[in-house]
Length: 180
Length: 198
Image (cartoon, rainbow over all chains, first blue to last red):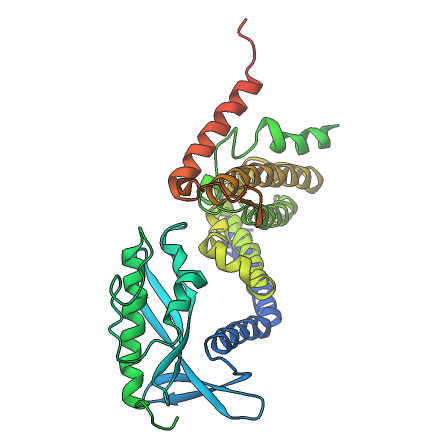
């Protein structure tokens, strides 16, 4: 056999076999991966809305809002994603908000790549808990009304800013005291 | 005997991290916690063993001129399989390892063993060599990550070891810490195995 033909045929067979293996493992794992992602999202939503047991996803003016409902189906609050630019890249947060009171109910860090031991402390509850009960009228400025982590001002500022920016956007859809 | 020699070769004499110093990109990057070290080592061992066996079986079929693309396809396939399964069943580990699992494709240990060993011998010897290399890599990076975790976070496998009064050396879990720990370990390794000068 011509050696070039052999090269092409061998490469082709290996590629086809590889494609088949990949397609198969994708089929097997994909439902599980989707489920994991959904579970993780739901967990974070339920964590930032106290009293919520279920979540419902609603699309409002190209924003994705997660409604938190309790067992009886009463609305307990809403949650939304916020993105800030930290020291080493994007910081993704889930913010819980109660529109009827105009207060935040919780903040949870979804993903970040801040410096371990310094900026990474934004993940700790000691930092995130301070946002609970903060009013929409607050300024959200690090070192003023938001306690910054020492040695990690940039990360702290990024979180505060991200919360404020996304909160302002959400407030246009869900004004304070309004229905949600 | 030959098999045992092939196996032990990767664990000690030609340890990929401490002796050959190849494939250290992932070894430096993911070794911030002991769990990551073990998981990364297992992922690499799996990919290395599977691809070594397959390449060894195909060694007489693959034309010499296109062997590198063939090896890469084989390695990439196994790596993607590990990547998908890890994402599906160990999401928390997957999150920490991030891009370093897909990067096993270009980890030079895998290609080096395929080119230098698996493509020249039968599947049994190739398996012994791959397992040895994989375990050699695993113990090496687990050791590095244990030291870094203990000093940098005061924990070991997530459990608090150092008492309350311990101030973590943050630098140890940052990139410079990886170089420091690895450098010292390579030096120690050389000291232990140094042959007396005639």
